[in-house]
Structures are given as structure tokens and as C-alpha cells.
Amino acid sequence: MKTIRTAIVLILGGMICTPRVCEGGISYTWVDMGMYTSGEPIGYDLDFNGDLINDILFMSTGMWFGAFVQGDGRIIAGGNLVHALAEGTSIGPDTPQEDWLQGYLGHLGINSSATVPPGVVINTGEFLLITAYMGVMFYIEDAVHYGWVRISNPFNGTGGIIMDFAYETEPGVGILAGAGAIPEPATAALITTGCILLALRRKKR
Image 1 (spheres, rainbow, N blue to C red):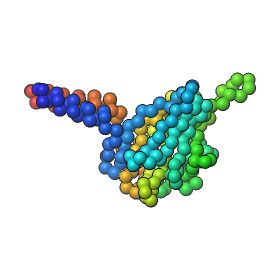
Image 2: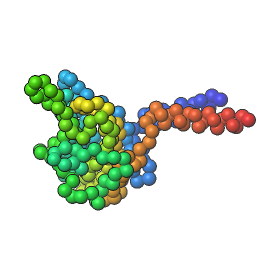
Image 3: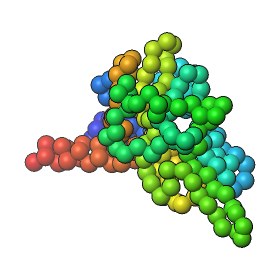
Image 4: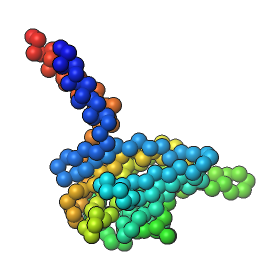
């Protein structure tokens, strides 16, 4: 029984502590990074493939939340605003070229807030009261890769939560928004524990 308990601990520890999981040709990473602030700006550097080269720099100031594309990367956007993609949306070479943007000086807005007289707050951007995906094109060395970043913002205001991201490891191959995602670590751990305990119970019978 002690051996079984040790095995469960090791399995759960690995699931919770390992940030990167590969499923076929998709590399997936859980993040859960909140980007809400009313004081100091918050930043998050996203590195799709762990090569220590940042692909997207996220920044939130409380008034605006945006993404700075690095290098020759692109994000699916329009009018300098990141498009909120539904799960299952195709991201890849079949995406219209005019939708792949870098924005002004590499910056694309995710959402923002502004106050206009007589004190009315106007919120802009597609990531408001929604959980959706942003489509990304980036490079590993000289090869193009496609990926997604899931952002959740249940509020009608600036900010959001960078939930997770994934990319297709095969160069030039597209990916569907949400493809390769696994349950958050806590949920996955509970599912695994339940399966193990159920198997042990059946074995005893």
C-alpha cells in the first residue's frame, strides 16, 4: 500500500509541476497568469518553445492590456486589435494574410478602458466578458510555427487571465484554437487520482 501511495504522489507531483506537455505534434503549457492591475504595470513574457527567446510580451497597465509581437511574429488581428477567436478556429497558412498583423511598433491591443466626460467609462477590444483565443505565428530559427493563447476576461474592463498556450511543433503546419489543451493541473490530478483509486478498488474485489 505504501508503494501505491508513493506512486500516486509521484504521478500527481509530475502533473502539477511539469509546465509543458506534448500531445502528438502539439506542445502545450499551462500558465494561469492574471493581468489585472490598478497600480504598477504587469508583464508576462511568453516563450512558446522554451528556447529562452520571447515570442510575445504581454503588458497590462490598468488602462490597456496588449501584446508586443517579437521578431517577425504575427497575431491574427484587425484595426490594431487582437481578434478573439472561438475554439476550433483554424490558425495557420490558410488564415488570410491580411489578418496577420504586428501592429504599431509591434503592439496590438487586447482590451482597454478610457473615461470621457462626464465620467463615462468606455471599454474597447474583443476580449471583454469572454474566454477566447488569440492566433499566433512565430519563428523557431527560420521556420514558421503556429500557435494559440487562451485569454479569459469575465469582466467588462481592462485585463484578463492568460490561461494557457500551445503550438504545432511541425513547421508550417496549422493548429486549431484550443487543440492540445489538457485540463488544468488540479483537475487533471483529481481525475488521475480517481482512476487509480477505482482501479485499486476493482483489484481488491
